[in-house]
Length: 197
Image 1 (cartoon, rainbow, N blue to C red):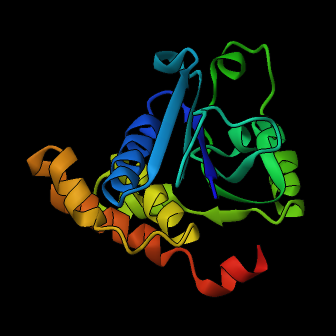
Image 2 (cartoon, rainbow, N blue to C red; image 1 turned 120 degrees about the horizontal axis):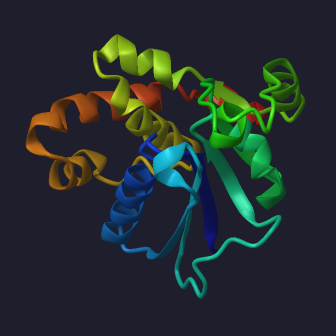
């Protein structure tokens, strides 16, 4: 059975690195994996999405509308922007973090924070404070790895040796902080929280 994971965010948040680590781990575990990525104006605060599909045999890397088992949003407004791709019974995990996109920065769009949060609550989305946790760890840039840890726990993929994947794919001086971040992300997702989603 094929599982579909959609990771979305704003350029500069490390969405692509997280999805590449996920893909590498899944491949090393013996899954057939296909990944596709869309960079909007990713260098300038544009929308970025990564689609990862894995299973025994995966034909297409593209997640159709209504096909994602889980939507992991690195920025809260992006969760709603990509909502149509989620299965009716799919899970939403989102980072409680605001990063204004180009349309908001240029005044062409408004960031309705209260409405976004109310809608995510209505959808029973799982809110994570990955940005705060990253700052606590001493490096705001590891927010993406915290979210990767939460995703791994949410999809019950703990059997894969993620520590080795991080060691092999991250610059040596950042390995320890990234492993710490990954483990913190795993801790943010409890079995009780999964049962309610």
